[in-house]
Amino acid sequence: MREYDKMISGELYDPTDIELRELRKRVRELTREYNATTEDDAEKRIEILDRILCSHGKNFYIEPYIRFDYGVNTCVGENFFANFNLTVLDVAPVIIGNDVMFGPNVTIATPAHPLLIEDRKMRTRENGELYDYEYAKKITIGNGVWIASNVVVNGGVSIGDNSVIGSGSVVTRDIPPNVIAAGVPCRVIRELNESDKMKMPR
Image 1: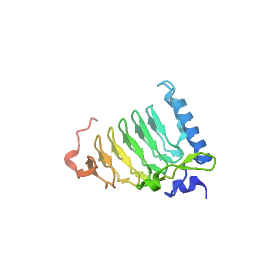
Image 2 (image 1 turned 135 degrees about the vertical axis):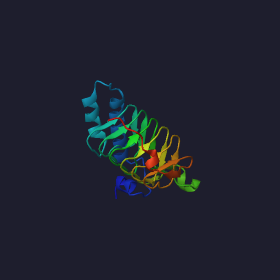
Image 3 (image 1 turned 90 degrees about the vertical axis):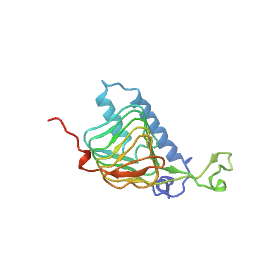
Image 4 (image 1 turned 60 degrees about the vertical axis):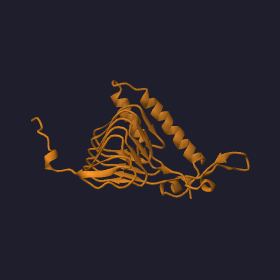
């Protein structure tokens, strides 16, 4: 079984695997290119994101700077917007729905390390090369979600449709749909309701 297959399945895997190194190198080159673009390079930005992401819907925009672990494990829906400094550690799949907005400095982090040091510590191959074992958990972000600034979403989490995650939150457990949630760790504050409706301009 390929280390890549182990990785996206949530099993322990070796991140020093040659295929994985090449995938990480590829996306780092692409993100450096993306981060060097300007507002006048709209078409070029789309072309680069086409090569980074596994898939995307119509009308998506991501402000530089961006960082991905692999890129090919991240899928975004239609009408997606991410503000400055998006970091996606997509060791496991990251699935983002339609009409999703991210504030600045959002981190999506699927990877994890074993808790016990004897499992987590570096190992040495016969040729002297160091390696370790890691694993990751999928993240799913539903349709209509707004994740405000400086939020960290940890692996294994699902965020339900239309929910709002308040600034500075660390999301460590599933969030149901149609709620406001915030805090460290992130907790549901209340359900969204008609009193939240704003008087919109025509």
